[in-house]
Image 1 (cartoon, rainbow, N blue to C red):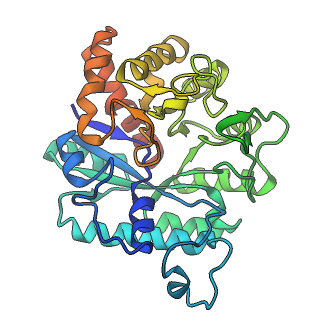
Image 2: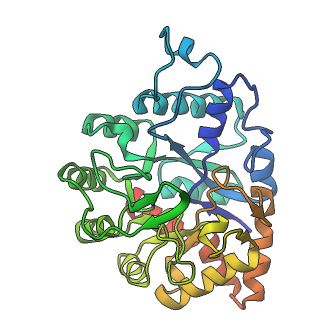
Length: 344
């Protein structure tokens, strides 16, 4: 079954591999996503997130030489890192030889669906890459970026995330006191004007409500599950899910074990992903559910461990008595509806 996946970290992984001197490419990279796996999984559109970790130590062999500095910097400049990933993406699109093509609108995805083509859409995970500059945001749009999270797990020029626990990577304290900053509101308005989807995954609880009060029409939580079923505070509350649904938005089922099961050693199974879909359907309705695998950004005990295995999720949803039409909505129709409305 065709599917649209709203989030993966594959491009960042390919870029980091280059910095380490490892030469592999999207065609057959030893990752959760590569072109062969996307084709085997019947992908319609894969969102490739350009993820930048603000405090990444520059500990890759030869990185300081690439930056033309004598000493390795304590962190990677986010705009520099972003452009490194963007170049990687552009080079991989050329190398793909037409097996996959970049799209920027919903209508282009409809056209690809009719022709049996595979597509990809470029996104950003970490609004700090813009360094508060609306000119940089426009540069991203011109490069084809059509969705962006305002934060990752660090406060930045735009907004606050929920508070991460430094001792427990997947633990967060909900933040209801700090959401969007003044510049964040300006970015949200600009994103609406230019036709870029506001992505609230990784945003604080207060930030979610700021976005909901500001955005007219759909927005997205590209890779967030339901907090009511799994208490990780990177997931969304029932109230948030209902508000997102009222906006006509969509949230992507995240395959990360820690966002599916509360346990010291959680496991990702297709049954648990289907349970999450069932819960979200009950809270917000079928039209709010999409896929946001977080492939190449997750690890652990994974039953569904790559893009070539997406059929396992369809089977699990059938076992939970989702109809064929409902599964199609989850797999691509809900996300494509949002793309049609926001991107054109």
